[in-house]
Amino acid sequence: MLNVPGCGANPNNGCDASDNYTFGSPTIPTWRAVLAMVYGGQNQRTGHLPLLPDGFNGEEIIYRRHNPARINCASVVREALVNNWSALFTGAADCRTATCTRLQHAFRRDDLAGTTDIFLTLVGMHAVPPSTTACTPNVGPLVDVFGTANPFCNAGLGYDFDELQNKGDSDYQNLDPIRRSVHRAPGAAGAGLEEVGEAFTAGNGLPNNTDAQCPLAATRVTTPGPTFGNASAGLKDHSYSNNQGMLALPGAFAALRADLEARRCNGLVMPVSVPANFRNPEDAYYAAPGGVTPVLCTPGEFVPKIINTTCAATCVCADGSPQPCLVPVNRDVPGVTNFNCLARPIPVPIGYPGFLSVRDSRVFNLRVMWGTNLPTSGTVARDNYFNTSLGPNPNCPAGLSAARQARVVNALYRLHTNRATNLNGSAPTRGTPLFDGDVCRTFSSTLQIGCLVKANACSIGFAGLTALTHLPSNIPVDNMAFRIEDIAPSIPNVQNLILSPPGLGTTYRMSHTLWVNSLKEIGVAGAVTGAEGTLMSALPGCFRDNAAVDAAISNHHFVPVPAGVTRLQECPSPFPLR
Image 1 (tube, rainbow, N blue to C red):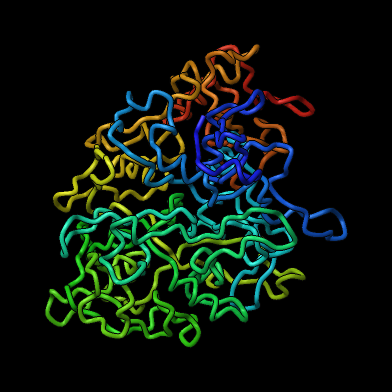
Image 2: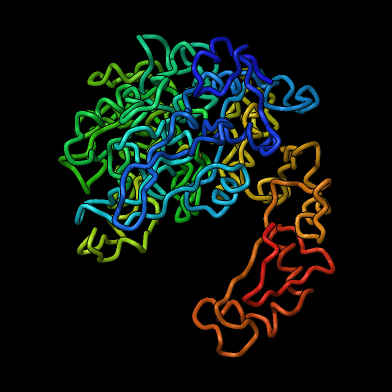
């Protein structure tokens, strides 16, 4: 039970008359209720749907916007919960992070990850909508009629039509209405203990290193109606998803500028998405060509540059101004200008006279820049995102090329490239706040989340098992999976999920089954073709050889199927998808 002063005055908060909010119910386990509130602002008022009906598409009623009677990422309950570390856990004093005072971040996988779909199902949050089929020809994707509010708070409040999204649109967004200071070491020249953040602060103070610079900038919803929310500028993103924060949607140039100018600090929920095409330290972590150590930007060195050539005349810079943008560079090597460098959090960037309102130069670290000796040097890097639904169709007549679909990367995953944080009670088990070093520089979103909760120990994250167990030999396994209902995530407790009858009393409920599905019979020569056929024929009778399957499962850091459980199911048959 959590007491939240004033909470009972608004029935949408779900508190009783004494301002108490109780997590868990006879039908909703406590752990699900807490995680749904942290990640999605979802309360337990099960008599209210998470999404409201917004029309009829000719075939079915479409539920699109968040229902404030069920979901509010800016609620006083959510704010009180995440600002009280001990309220998040039972027996918090026994955790290795017992010194924490509040939750700094809740890391998540991207929309496209299967882990995300599983998490939403297990926690009881609504699904991410399907990928879009709509586009502006030769420009970028648009939200289609099946777009909805995204279930995660990093995508904003989701109450208005200009906040609707499709799958993948929230992967780089930093719009959680609960904001967190961007940690930095004390002193005017203090290094960034968190190394990415938004550009602006409230007033003319130091960069985003105090909560006073990061106010909660959202309108709290009190009563439902035909329109609600009207989220403060900074909590929406009026831009194309392939050029997020840079290329305004039609008629939304002023709104995009207002978004950027009002956006401060970092959000509580933070997506971690390391692009699959970033495979070396130069691409992902500011290293020089062939190197591994991040290159630091030279203090006071800025160069005007058109950083997004696909929309040179229409894309904007970090502060909302038109291109060319003044960007920091490294000029330590005579005659060489390196755009791929890590910026330190100086209060007003020296040598940056055109944009004195920019208060934290760590905003430049959000954009991955191509560095030196390339035709693309000084331009923004893109991921390799590709949506097959954007082939030619009535909503996108000519289709959208792969080049137009690839997204500008907003590199929130770089939060702890060089340093860890010790603020707000964090006791990092990876990296140090005292000097630069190799902290979190992986090329896997799962591994990166596992590392970030070490460097930022007052944070949590959801990811696959490899975040815990599959680490380089020189990195200790010094993060942990939390117990669920006091049940440890041991192999026997995970295996209890599929035993019959299931061992519910000792089952680790944050678990799921993994299937290989085929429309044709597995093991019959020629029945399955293409890439699937290559997989099926890798070993003769592979999927009927339990020893081979178990070895593959263990080698990829999954939990083996317990003895006595049927491995193969043929349709029609009820799968044990418990």
